[in-house]
Image 1: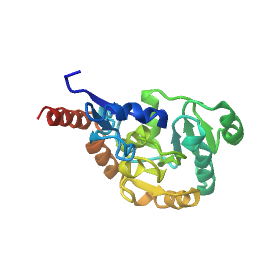
Image 2 (image 1 turned 135 degrees about the vertical axis):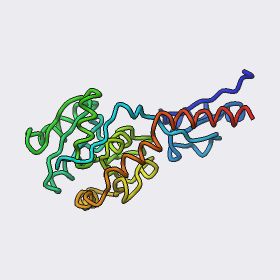
Image 3 (image 1 turned 180 degrees about the vertical axis):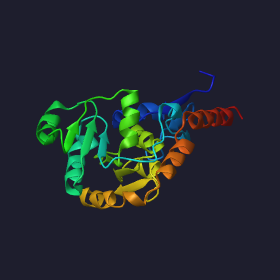
Length: 231
């Protein structure tokens, strides 16, 4: 068709989809949701990060002593590693998220839930999510895959909570290492990072997330793409 077509690619379901996108390389305009989530075979007009409605989150200057895992219960999200990090750090871990892999939950997560040191809260709605993210000492995000974008990472920082994440996928774009959290490579490094969280300024986390991952920032980025195409 003659009108310009913009497509934001939210990750790839399979490498098999690439030839379809590639077919329209010269007649379409592709936007990625992170620089890390790009195929070298495609032409991109820009990266526009996912935008968050900042009014749904409250900054919390103080925190509890508990760590938080917030996300779907699945091997690639690293719930088991989060439990290991919490145990080795001698801190309580609160887990909230949809059980996406029942077998994984039954074998790697449920045996450790004791409602004292390891607590599973189930799914959390917006109000509960805001409180959990804001009260956490740190969000643990020990992912086992190249995550295109981590909404919970940006949302936690928006509440002032620093994030400890495995250094994969888009994490280096979301987290300012040493300022809004820590990028680590394994459980041992994550435990060390937990002990260094006190050096992170929670206001720095909020200001970074507000300036980079707000819905207004996403709107501005999209408008820039449209104007660039029309010029």
